[in-house]
Image 1 (spheres, rainbow, N blue to C red):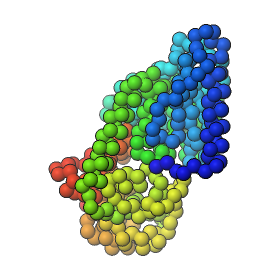
Image 2 (cartoon, helix red, strand yellow):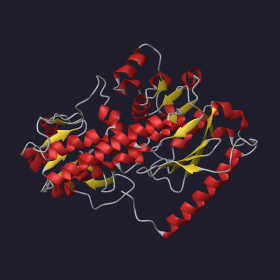
Image 3 (cartoon, one colour):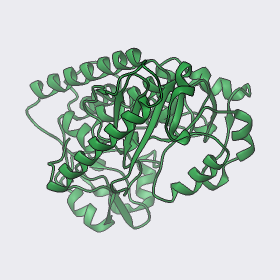
Image 4 (cartoon, helix red, strand yellow):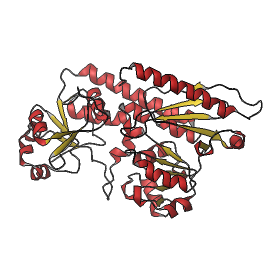
Length: 389
């Protein structure tokens, strides 16, 4: 889902190109006759938040607007192979020596992508160990090979130092994230923002595997993994749209207190519903944030819904009625068409939908399509979704 570019967007793109040109020179400066002053753009097809440009001396990773609400924030990182690390003239805080040998993952999506590349042994610490679903990594946590460094203001600085990471991969919810980012930087540790959760296309989110491919010097494997994902996703989408003749109307989520935070029409989940042959109730909206609506206004629109997805922490119809009895009169509730994305939970409530789901959009697509159009994949058992009883 690529928005129409305005004049200011073209100006920003030109500035970005100039910055890449300048960075390319810094990557090649003072390196003798070994390298050329040139860059080669890697193929980034769906992701909107990162670019990879390979020079003869390093790979330039450019991340754009890495947290919600960020405007015109551009961050560059120079990924330099170990044999060339002393030959590069650039800001040392932006130089990341690759392949990375030790990494701290602050999100379960990062864990999933590291695992997809077979590099789980490089994970030395995580944030929120109890929420990790992957059994191999959970086993390493239980054996004390992976530390839990905590969250945000509760970060354990001593554990970060003792873990001796080459890189801390973080995500930013807002500009306030800069506070704890600075704390990690002050420890002398390299920090990189990951904006995969802000991608609006399911394949765009999965394409961040290429960033991990770059930091582990496994570009070919990362490209191969992503090509397999995209091929499968597009094939499934074509099958779905070739078979259906109706589009069930979909309601998403649950209210929090008296407010229902609605995913906009330009969101990741909205795209999945459309690709799965559904019609999302708010598909014509656009926003950079979840949109707050009153429960009453959502209720009125939800009377048109056929299917209700992603009921969150409310895991039964009884829970939903206890929250608000009016919800029990909505058509999906009455017709027993409620489904939640919590089939794969660990004992602490860690949900694999938010972990391996980032690298398996083709599976989520098939799950949702099988719910919306039960006859399209006979005998298929959803992986991430279950019916709410």
